[in-house]
Amino acid sequence: MVGLQQVFKSFGMALVGTMHPRMLWLSLRPFLIVSVLWGCLIWLTWAPVLEALSIFLTTSVFTSWIQDGLIWAGFENARAWIAPLFFVMLIIPLITISLLVLIAFSTVPSIVKIASRQAQFHDLECKRGGGFFGSVIYTLWSALICLALVMLTLPVWWVPPLVAILPPLLWGWLTMRLMSYDVLAKYASAEERDLLIQKYRWPLLCMGIASGMLGAVPTFFWATSALALVLFPIVSFIALWIYSLIVVFAALWFSYFLLDALKQLREEELDQALTVQSRVVDMELPYHGQ
Image (tube, rainbow, N blue to C red; front, side, top):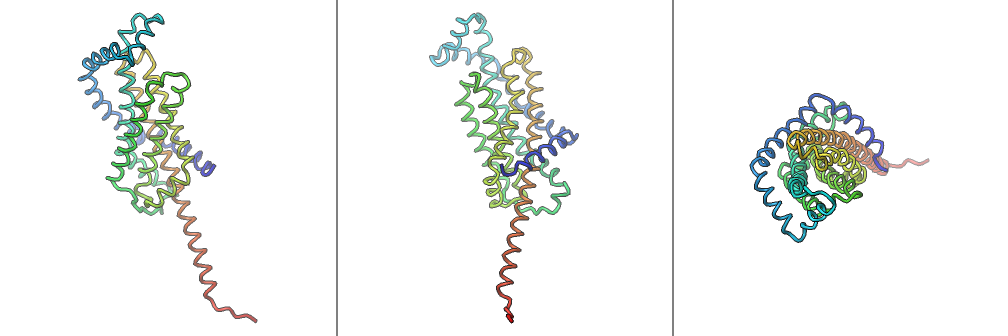
């Protein structure tokens, strides 16, 4: 696989770099912002949303069978906790996507700046192939696609094989999309960015899926643990900060990998240009045969 050595090399560098106090703060800042915003929203809407969900789950022909099935299976108190459980399941993807988008906007540029301070990237020219508005459009469009896929697949997340496959794939795809664009926005031209994403699409997708699998661990516990329903604020805050730290690690991983790939691409282009120039010079020089 192209770039496999770079994948493991950048993984090790990102793992070490994530433990730096600056990276811990970069993971804490977006977590605090998202926690405050969503905490206020949940506090304001908890009671009316639960009431609406309870009515919907009881009266809708599409969902009433879930509650009836749980009661038939012996869960007599299903009516008491089925609505809060569904609310948590619905709110988790929204919080997760909003945190990932916020980190992509506010934190990834700082992470790329830190990664570019490595000695091997000092001479890397900034070509600024991506701007702020392009990043906004690309990020929002990717997030909307991911959110639509989440809502379409959410009913089957409880199926045993799919619950371990779908969330990592969705988070991994979104992570790959956002990180690849934002990491290269400053240093690569638009042509270089498209070429690198095309050339390394499979390593980048594997990196995104691996990051998604790591990020799905706190999300899965958050969504399925009975403790998460009892201690929802505390458990959700802990899980959200862990996920924020994983996203920061992913951003650092993508930064090291893509900056190294960009450096190699430019070195290869320079070698090819020098080779062509050398051939042109050789052809233009007069031949003095004996």
